[in-house]
Amino acid sequence: MDSLYELSSRAIRRFYDARINTPPVLAIDTYFHDGHRFHDAWEVIRGEAMAILESAQPIPRFHEIMPAQADISATDGRDWRMFLLKIYGQDIRANQAHCPFLSELLAACPDVLSATISFLAPHKHIPRHTGPFRGILRYQLNLEVPPAEDGRPGTVLWLAGDEHRLGNGEQLLWDDTYPHEVWNRSEHTRVALLLDVRRPDMPLDLRLLSSAVTRGVGMVARWRGFS
Image (cartoon, rainbow, N blue to C red):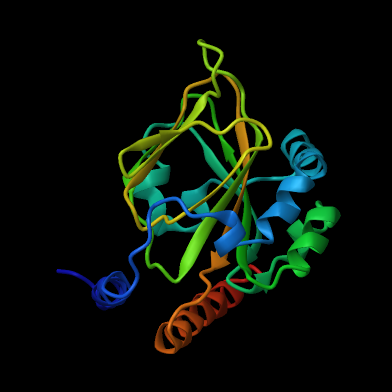
């Protein structure tokens, strides 16, 4: 039997889907202009991320942070590790101390609700899934993408029927409510910055609902000790 949480999540999803009809990939200039600030500084951000990867700093697997995500994280014995910096408005100060430049940039961009450095192990596959609701968008900035055997970027994002291969320093703004999955088809770890950003220009009722949803998730994160 579906839980109350699952039923409410589906209801919220349907409410947004009926009102918002945008494509899977969106223009950064229109929907998240601050994305260019991250892109312009990608080499500095990469340096901080690689220092975290190479240090003794523990980086938990995604399903160790959120057990409900085990069906996409703990599927093949290979790691998908997440270094959380911000969760729906709640800053994770201990982790931010390891990347001061990126943390200052996050503080200057109020539309960024969550921020994570994602470490995808060699040959890791994230199965097809969808995000929770269209009140947020996913900004991805690839920081370290090893090549595949054919020389192309070794990590593939399949999104709503199209493949995206982003190389080092390349960015994409996309709607994760569309079906998507990821493969790392290389021999090394892929490193990416993932941001959840506020969707602009929504009707007032959707803006209010989005604020309530994200505030609730942030409160849960704080209660669980992430802040």
